[in-house]
Image (cartoon, rainbow, N blue to C red; front, side, top):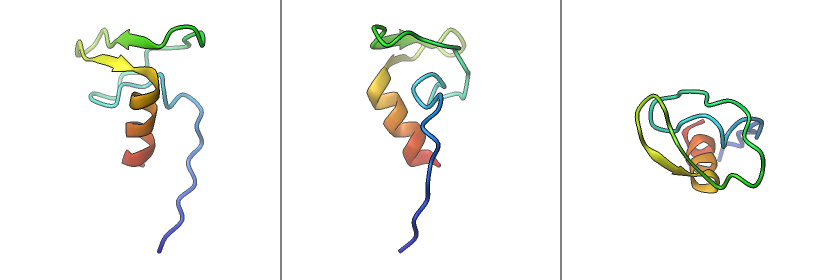
Length: 54
């Protein structure tokens, strides 16, 4: 087994599809659309995908 630690900083704000950094979102924003590729993201799911990709 291998343990990988991931800094959770910005994991919900970087597009898991294209890697675009959409900048700071306040916590009340739960969904956002990537202005670069147009994918609609749920904030928690997007963060989980980014963490898994590390």
